[in-house]
Length: 132
Image (cartoon, rainbow, N blue to C red; front, side, top):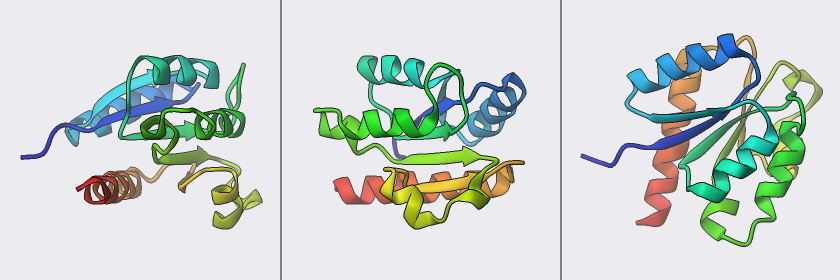
């Protein structure tokens, strides 16, 4: 059996944090939750993650600014972590614009949790295959 995947959730809504934790822990992911981009970068200094679920509209540092900072990190394992944007503003962007910002995929709010689980599994499994 493969090792438990570690997911960093960057979300300022406590309701969405709680639901994401319950849904993803049920899927056997290890979850860390932070409220803004500055906290994401602090967590990234402490450890590696298999993927990040990044709200784009957060206080202190938004998800786009944070994603750009992650992509500039010297540590390749950290700078190449898959980032999935979680946003209510997806209609303002297309996937090519998200990728130009350094975001790998996006999920629209209100969140379809079945889609979230499937997309996350697809991304972390793709990363695992690329490493082997």
